Length: 88
Length: 541
Image 1 (cartoon, rainbow over the protein chains, first blue to last red):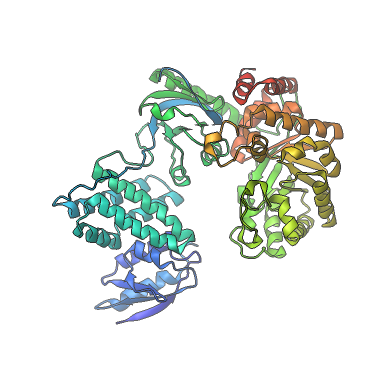
Image 2: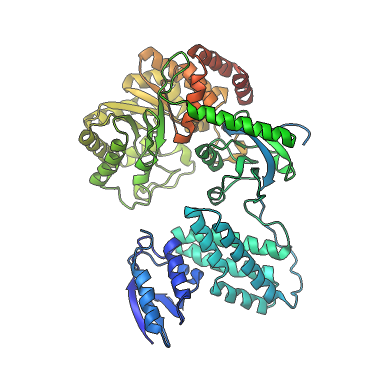
């Protein structure tokens, strides 16, 4: 399954505005994107509660994965928002 | 409501309108009913309703409040939450109970993450309350939206509630809270009349038109016609007050410079004749080690430059057991308000203070600003003298101390002999004089800065300042009360420092009284038997 490691670019981490933008981006994809961090099991990136519960801080590395047709497009889109400082 | 209700006026101004109360959170019945056949659908419908209504609410506000609401709406529509709720329903829990359980589990997960993430637990609680209220068919919790301008009534307000206040709120009346409560500070910063500690206010039915006088603390029953008249005259008062500009002075030209209380350069405005209280805590929050001198220097420079030649009174770090900062590593205390805090932290960690003074001195030299430095929580003349020696040693000219402890007020003459100026912090001075915890909303009447014992101590310090010809300022919330400002001026207080929104009302109050008027008002206040009488006598005098 295509997967990618991305460093969280938002200094404040994945909560507030950055978390909301990441979740909205996941909701717009054709395929389900899952996101995980460290030892935690992958969660549905369309779930704000699950994304918040990762507790990712700025600079943490998260792994995103997706399967099926359009998986690469979805991962590109997700990586782009994750890497940006969305709170700037 | 046959008679007027009395509370504690904490933000001046007069207005009137219908009362609408904050909805209280729903309570689940203690016995769990048999689940119906449609609990799964009801649970989804409740969450969908909450999500849609929060989105609607988000569209009516701007900025941070809109983002908080939009994120909360996303949480209500969350697939993880929906799954968890569905599992509880499948286990035989009725919809309201299933949602309560599922959110409880999620709250624990957030709480375990700590910090910012833990704060989201409160957002979850709010959406649970909304969903449960919808399911139980009881009134929605949260801010009322009557669609007309109204007087907001609540037990107490949370910071999240206050973030959502919009222009339709005319005034705030709460059952709990004191003069330094979150509600009071917010209301003053928005220029909204406010009354706290009004014990009977929750008995007034929604829709009842009332008048609110944030100076006297009286809530009166009025007719809708009277309400409209009061509102119009209150508006006219506000416009008249806003039209008075220039330096603070009495109508006969006695100068009382009006200064600003600020926490960083972002709080600076062009109004005001300088900064009477620059709180430096923002630099130290969330630190594991003390901020480096160079970093402090640049933050101080930013503010000194923003002052544009006006005087700046900087308060050294005011932290301690009651306002803990991790890097200080202070032990927990039984009685933190009476423990190692303010200047006393320098006994444990002297370098934090000397480094701060060095950074202030460098920033003052670099900008050429008129910088005065004062220490918080000083009790003796010896402490004042030691602090002044450190300030001069750092190369700064003006050393002072805060008068917050009754011991310091009683010995003001000796303390003033050791320093160049003092500034009275009325919030802590009230707490220590009245032996009343600032955080205890049930004792707000005792914490009132109108308490004659507190005023007497202020007068003692003012007199010492006059005799020694040294400045005595006030920088507590009380300085922003227009009537008290006149009383203080009458006592001989030389400057008044407050948050920016209070400036215009205080300026207008001074401009409509002569110095002699103010002296008479000071006598009336000092001669009263209690805070209520003092306020009434001065308002009527």
